[in-house]
Length: 453
Image (cartoon, rainbow, N blue to C red; front, side, top):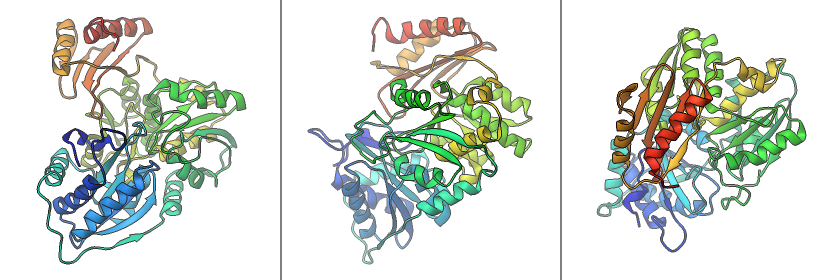
């Protein structure tokens, strides 16, 4: 079973449990066959990993069965974070499939795909996989493929360590919140060998997420790490999402550091290493990054929101680093792919070399007031965006390349449909908190029309 709604802009996500599932093992088998057919992998190979969701073993085995029945060899790395899967694709030079629903609730599962060297698949290729999977069954090949299991966790950790100067750092106390997600698998391998005092939260792998949902974009899911940082007098906190490809940073006061400012911090460091390099950000990343890149003599490229778009531009422009507001961080030395764990190591390295605190490091960056991402359920997203455009007519430059962006020298407003959920997302940034609040409230009044959704 496969329902069309599971096919999103960048990946596949849908409900797999309960009374009304959107896909199941039969659908996973069809997707395995379609992946092989569309990418021409008969007599070829790809690597597959999965997160800790309870539906993972059944769905991964069904996907493998569909793929091997149609002639592909599968390298199964078992439990893995999404960025470990990107690593495996890059190291082994084969396409990859990660079975995960990232930060979605426990009832969901999904698939993320890449080409060899962790290169993104485009929307046309994903559309073709959907078409083939939902079409007539494909005849099995005469020569079935084989599946072999490989453990790459140690190699993954060693690769990350080789990319960051970690010698001679002062000893830091670090809280890390795995949210019962895949960081509980990868963080010990990466962090334990370092000169750190570690305090782990919710490190047990549990796809039911008994402690808090695995979405660090929601402020309530950061509260445990914030409290632990304050309680233990930690230097910094790290909060990972369900598949551990994103990482949020908490400073020593227990305050959340904007992912845009982490982007600016790492961009500054990377441009010092490679002057004149290119940095990729998305349309709703803070303009603080623009200023940092300009001051460092770097080149800035703006992407649509979403890992597929950012990774494509990373490759096109040979960018050294990229960042998104959602705490996705991309590195050329990591095949242009996103990895929250490598971003965390960069932050730890900068903090460990400094004599100040995390908040002091961030205070040196340009400052803007931001609304954060505000979500609303609307009946007609295009019409609602048109309403916002009309309300802001005559003010700023209007751009429709990624939702609707209205921008002046002092502020910007962006409204765009979610790539993964039935929501309209609002982001506002301005030079002062008062101006930001005024613009935010004006846009929300149009979007919600008196509705509290």
